[in-house]
Length: 112
Length: 185
Image 1 (cartoon, rainbow over the protein chains, first blue to last red):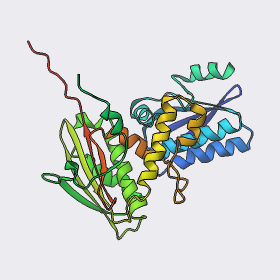
Image 2 (image 1 turned 60 degrees about the vertical axis):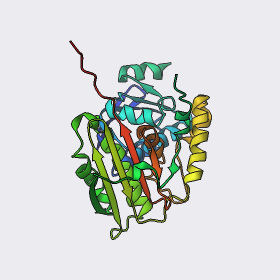
Image 3 (image 1 turned 90 degrees about the horizontal axis):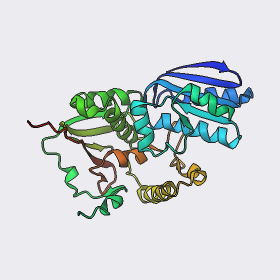
Image 4 (image 1 turned 45 degrees about the vertical axis):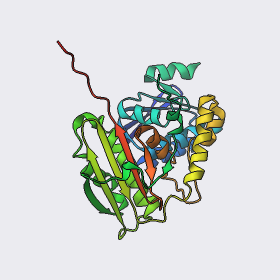
């Protein structure tokens, strides 16, 4: 799994590339925690290039989401598709996670 | 019309050693050491015999991987000398698995069912504030890598049942797949 950060205005987009599984999902968690230490307040997690997620990956997203919510900062998860979407649906978390269909939509929602 | 209320009752983990899901007749068999680093590899060795149409890209693999991970990690505590035994059978309509470890069994099964029942109530009420406390099942043994959500998805995915034996160290599961109807004429 590879993580890349890019900036759009006040938003930090994290592009996740690869599989979010039991061996590497902690990396995303660690990255977000480091960014929070550096006072980042607006996160967009882009899962466009993620084709596999397991319960550890979902767990990492839950942890990130609940931490950011508690701090009253903003998070949007975007471009969920294929089996990643199916796993989130099976776990019934589609309503829990803030989700958009595209990065553009996520940026627009951040402005609201 | 058939009474479908029983379907909602199915959404809990059962204990029933006499379930037909424990019938191993005609099933393939593999066993693995409890090596955490190789869980996905072991899963691939099993899922490779499944027909493409039931793999749903990698959803079947993901669901099997979770059950093997539970056996390796929570059952056998990653003790390499302890085995995970897997019986499996796939066709275009079904995926049937039995996974057994050498651990003490899923002691907290009833607690898990209680937790899940509350989670489903909160979900049906769409109470997303309270849901935050029910998105992840944690015990004293949980660590940072445990998502605490694998069994929620498992119960939904394995629609033909997800049943433990009496010792609670073996779980049998069945998933059925809709058959494509061919147009006639």
